[in-house]
Amino acid sequence: MNETILTGIKPTGKLHIGNYFGAIKPALELAKERQGSTMFFIADYHALNFLKDREKFKEYTYDVAATWLACGLDDENLVFYRQSDVPEIFELNWILSNITPKGLMNRAHAYKAIVENNLSEGKESDDGVNMGLYNYPILMTADILAMNSTYVPVGDDQKQHVEIAREIARIFNNTYGETFILPKEIISKNVGTIPGLDGRKMSKSYNNTITLFCDEQELKKKINRIVTDSSLPDEPKSTDCYIFKIYSLFANKTQIEEMTRKFERGISWGEVKKETFEVANSYLKDMREKYNYYISHPEIIETFLKKGAVLAREKASEVLKKVRENIGKVNF
Ligand code: ADP
Ligand code: TRP
Image (cartoon, rainbow, N blue to C red; front, top):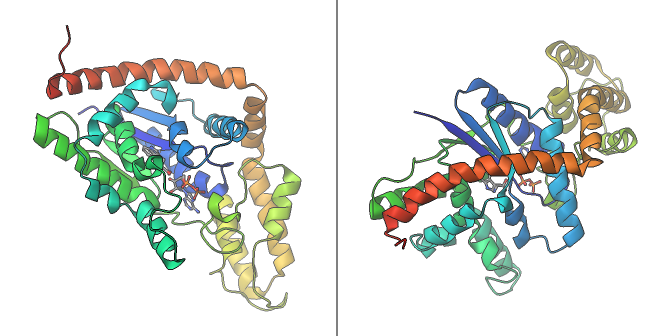
């Protein structure tokens, strides 16, 4: 079978090292390992339920694009596009809305969490919920099914969304006959959840991120802000701490072993932070340069995206042709 690996990132803020190690890097590695086609896209219309600022919407869209490009997206078999350039996705979104049980959306984690939070604060259950947010899993399903995707690499938090996509595909196939491949999520196990500066999950929503391509000064400042305990410099330290986890993301095996020995012997947090900055900076340096290049040349980004949109539309058009036939749409 011809496999398609597909994943998307929504432009809701500047990407951080959690996004890189949790989503971008594993997706790029998977694309290298597997035969078949790979599709990476900017899930820009997914950001609209949250973002209502024109300038930020543009800025974050280019940030996601430049990040993918800087991280080494150059494979020949890879299609890179912007969701909003593919109208077929939105047609499919509507068709799928009509076979999706409302209860399936009520059970989606992201929506449920907001409802629970509202209730606990004594607000109305749907306070602040727009239909874009409520229907988010259907649009994500359309993203996945429009490209006939077989595998969807995502972080653990997106697992349920891919399960919903599989369920909607199954309902469609039962209603109208075999049309869609049932997609499967691929969760990268080895990185887990990357902690933020305060130790909670690193997330744009918590304001605790290390922006992936911030400048050196900013990187140093952020690393210095990572929470540590109050142990003295010469006291032995446990490697089960946030700073060690961040250090290990950027360091090689030998460096990690050496740092482990330093922790056993005793090392000051200041020194650990300094070394963390050094490994992080040398890991990110070249990619940051490429990122800055793309950010200052949006026309090059546009060229990539336009080329990608043509290929993505070709694929989605084939899928939609079959969908329209199967639902009995009449063409005069
Ligand atoms: P955020 O929480 O910052 O808004 P998104 O929800 O946009 O991030 O996530 C985009 C991708 O990055 C998803 O695949 C998600 O699983 C991954 N990701 C986000 N934060 C982390 C983290 N702290 N650790 C690992 N992966 C993450
Ligand atoms: N919902 C995903 C996130 O928040 C982004 C996304 C949108 C996506 N459409 C997708 C991921 C399709 C994989 C496949 O991270």
